[in-house]
Amino acid sequence: GPLEDVGFLARNAQTLEALQARIGGRAITSAQAMTALEQVLQCGHAGEALLWLDWKSISRVMPAARSLRYLDMRGGIGQETQRADGASMKAEIRALDSAEAVQLVIETLQAQIARILHLSAAKVDPDRSVTDLGLDSLMGMELGMAIEECF
Image 1 (cartoon, one colour):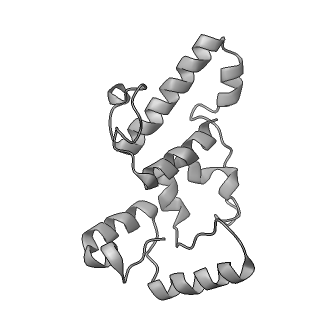
Image 2: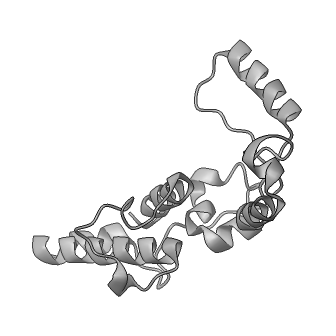
């Protein structure tokens, strides 16, 4: 997670506060990060992360945080992975012909990218790279989780 006592965030308190508000949690110290790194290296696990999250806050800005995949981390508060109208996106795609299904996927991705970048969906050109649109790595993670949630 974000480190509060060293690096860029230690020098930019306003950015740290904005990030903490966005993830709904708090930063960790470099000592906490080093302790966790030592434990991970000793256990031989890969892909570990250490951060404090307020799942209620984070799920407001990242709908994928409500998916069943994160149920254990949220303390068991579950919610089905469905569209806002309650319909399953997979079922809807299967019911469409190929061209309509592709169009639905494009529109859904445009909407998710627009939400993350705080743009209107019309401004998201499906032929442009998301990095060219301004998506950074944290936003990319959010997009990946939103895609898993939708599809």
